[in-house]
Length: 149
Image (tube, rainbow, N blue to C red; front, top):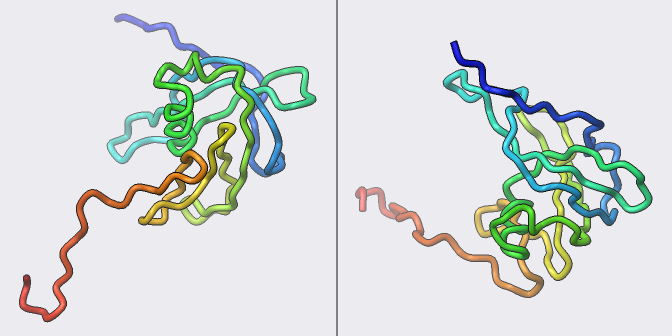
């Protein structure tokens, strides 16, 4: 039987409820996919994108799981290689959301010159300030008169 080496992440984790929106920070490591404590519907382990983050005034970096909106904003600002995301000043923004009925605080990392907005479908996206949020590529057809067309 083969046993692949597992990477464990040591150190303290950022808690959304304990950070303040508007805090300045920098990523201190590249982002890597790591197993999370949650499972997919098929029972397989869900993955999360984890990096080390250093907050202004702190001496030690903490672990943070990056959400899709943050990753897409970082890709737009600094490119697809997560090593290039390190060292840039980011502004942390928080938002209270419900996940599976539980109130949690989501964390978004916003690059300089970018802003967090909602797209046409109500999803949070991080875009360049002043840019238009893309509309859906295909609009659903609406049956106005009930005849199926």
